[in-house]
Figure 1 (cartoon, helix red, strand yellow):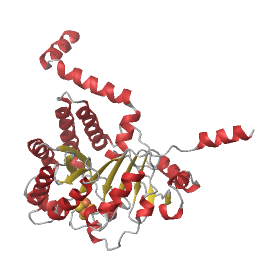
Figure 2: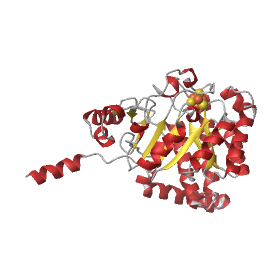
Figure 3: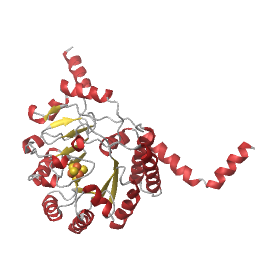
Figure 4: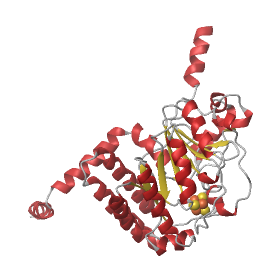
Length: 355
Ligand code: SF4
């Protein structure tokens, strides 16, 4: 009987998460139009001992902010996570404006973790990036940081673009910049969040929805044109953004708060930036597992199930794509097959059937 109870308890346990975004600070040196974090004055409180509680189950950790390189202990935080989550790929997302400071800290991190990834947020080419981020010479600073990091030997390097109503036309230009600079390109669509981006609301204007969806459809086709399976997965992600913009739905269910969590600078663990229900605070539990299995965590997951708003974020989509390989591969094959049929031939067949 005792064994049966133990087994039932084990079955009820929620498996530990695979993916996380860790916002080490909300303090920021940018002045972005779509985010109010730069008004934040509260200092972060999570200690290194609390970061050491993060679970070894993690395979991907995105260090974000605010501007993470403004955290005085950023190097030590990465060192701590390397020990507590040894199998995780750690990538830092930065606005890229503090070139010297970023290069110095990344060099220090590479001394014990050469595989560190860095993504520099760039939302438009030239003046457009400055207009959005409101930092003079912002674009030039980001490109300088990118090149210095490449010279340093950072192999896992990329440009991260976020689409708003203001910069739709710059998606493909930045994709070309990334190719020319020989770095990766990742993209996102601005979501509205009750608490992230400083609570700023980012609503997609009706007239621009078709343009947003069309730009992401075209990006998906560019990624599919390669023979690199990693880029096909990115094509599917871009397809998900197009569908979210056009139809307001997710192409795959994702499990924020189960496969993924977001940690804020004060130790609060929430399901994602879209879900404000707190699963628990790192300072209140001896282990991450205790937090993850708590009644409060279960209630927060219930909140996710009832949440009305669809979302398609790289952090939650990554595990969703891994959980649904058949659907993803079927979409990729259908798209590949469609591009192999000459358009004239498809039209001819259509006419033949009609006749
Ligand atoms: S979007 Fe990023 S860089 Fe801009 S203010 Fe917000 S946290 Fe800072």
